[in-house]
Image 1 (tube, rainbow, N blue to C red):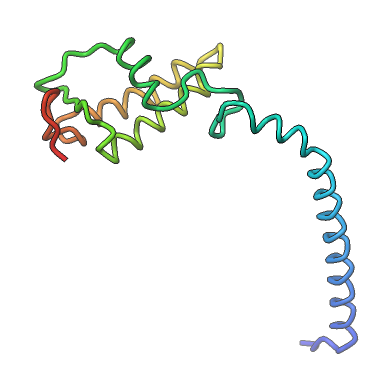
Image 2: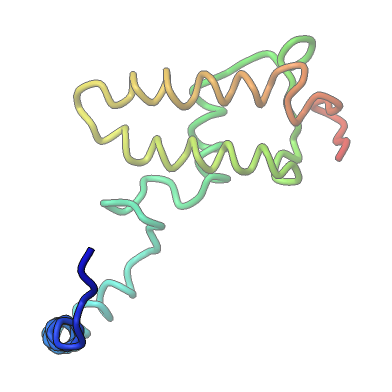
Length: 148
């Protein structure tokens, strides 16, 4: 096996130096473009916050979505097998699951094809079943009583 010569190392270092110079130039070009778009970014910042959504969300938060959409559309009798806690915001797992369901709904409801079906089957049905089930985060709660 041949050992690389110092000349080979010099060639590799020169190539790396040239690449670094090009990358630095590219970064500077991108930074100047970002500065040129600053007024547009300021306008966008004045719009209502849409945490990662491609378009502004229909509902401003998971809490609003639960109150104005979930409770209106999915009316279930709570008690027995189906558990719910009016203080759901105090249950970290519930907050996580409902936030995830809301975010997925905000994106998938825009799909005129199978978006809502995909949302129901992949997001709502499994998460709502876990949330309201006998071993879910509300297992020790009732509609009237919160147990953390």
